[in-house]
Length: 153
Image (tube, rainbow, N blue to C red; front, side, top):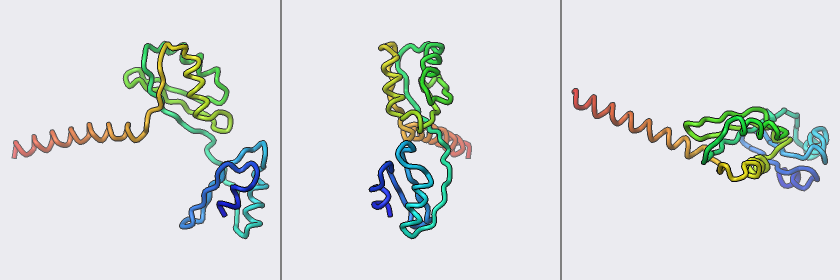
C-alpha cells in the first residue's frame, strides 16, 4: 500500500501502521486533491476517510547573541505562515508555531538566518536534549532529597 501511494504524483510520503489500521499521507495540494487520495486508497481495496491534521507545526530554535525582541517580532510577522511565536530570553529559546502547508521548517530557519544580518545566530534545539536536561535537574533534586531523608533517618 505504501509503495503504491508513493508512486502517485503529488504524494510526498505515505505511512501505514498495520497494527492500528491507520495511515498518514503527506501530499502537495497543488498536484492532487484529498478526494483523489481517498479514492486511490479505496481502489487499492482499503477503507479510507479523510481526517484533517492540525495544520500547524512548532520549531524550537536556540538564539545566540543580543536579540532585540521588537526586531524579532517584526521579522517573524513578515513571514507568511507564522501563526505565533514566543522568545524566552532566559533560555535563549525561540518557539515558533507555523503552518506547514505554507512554510517549511527549513525555509523558516533559513529566512530567520538571512534576516538576522549576523546580529544573532540561530540553531535548531533538539527536543530530546531539552527533555534530558530537565531529567538531569530532576534527578539531582531527587538525589538531594534522598540523601537528606537518609541523613535524617
